Length: 259
Image (tube, rainbow, N blue to C red; front, side, top):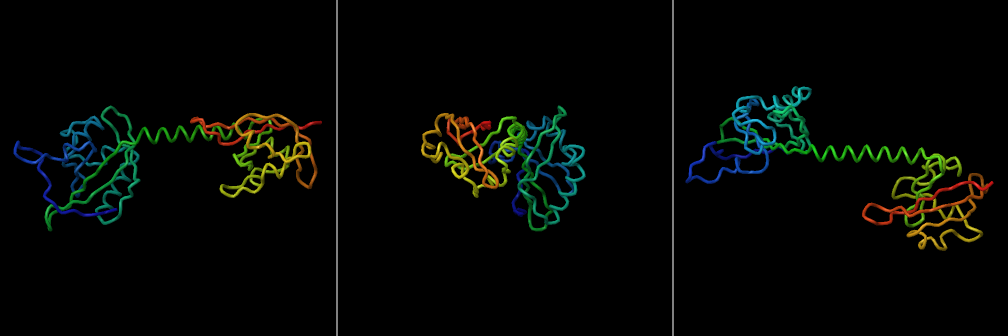
């Protein structure tokens, strides 16, 4: 959110008798910029993050330290901010370090005036979120690979939650059961079809020992009622679906037809 603060901004130099200059001693990287975008001060945390000395940054436009393809956008956004536009707290820019690396930084801005009629300054906090963003991308890539792998498994596989509801079917299971994943599972929290409504084992409901089977595997034969009321005899092999922290999330069921 855009806001304005009136205060006497501390001078760069500190004397032994003056209060501690919080600008220089905060661990958060900070840049003080004038209304034209020139850097007036860069604190030590900012210098450590980007690898430049404060002297190397002084007088330069703040967007000169942004990745080349984002400089025009950053300049326009800075001018719009001075004009009263709110700056999103999730605004991110790629900053260029002295070693020519690119850091993904999350920006927040504060408009500051020294006196009623003084020109405004902009105080920019630049927090390095490169590792967080990179890890999120890796997790996203891994999830996409895992989803594609599951969907492409040649063996018919159904994923159940701990209540026995169908959550996922791969393509082989869709062909075997003549039922799409969208028809069987649906978006959380709406679950349309229960495992027990689809299968029965030797005339008994499958869930007669379902809770017991959550924590251990099971193998047997079942009857599946498929599209149009037709029935298929299937072999079923189950294994608990266990998260990295040991919590059982559900059951993975592999199906194969009995000819």
